[in-house]
Length: 193
Image (tube, rainbow, N blue to C red):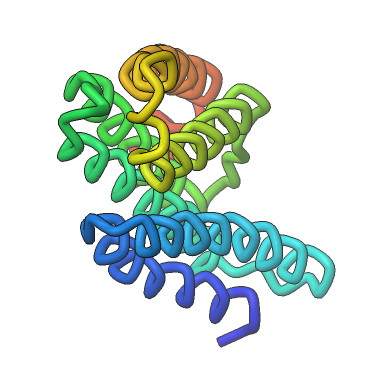
């Protein structure tokens, strides 16, 4: 197993640690969850750079890498539903999770025949998702300080809802664009099976 794949596997092992940290209602553990989430993003970039520079991309890594990304981000979004102060509509998380796992699955089953890269629309979606998770985690870390100020309380209640609705719409649109853009290749790949 090459170094890039080992880093990807480490990212997967970070998910349960992230989950435990976010669920413990202490600002210190929420801060640790934030740092783990950022570490997951940094290691994603690092394993991609290593795989490309050393030319050690594998079908295993190409399938596992997006799955590792989805595990961390969907764990965060699902956990956010448990925070009543965030008031995140559950349909937004369902749209994000279902779209991301369907597209990840389509990409992984198509990879062996033809590579289907993430387009710029999908990269923007991922960026928006990651930034939103970081901001919401920051809000949770500083929740007690935020709730002290009435204006900040409004931010805690409004930002997550608006951000998640925007991300859900963008995520759905990027999934539709993906399927339209690669429908011929997807049909060819599935008809060969």
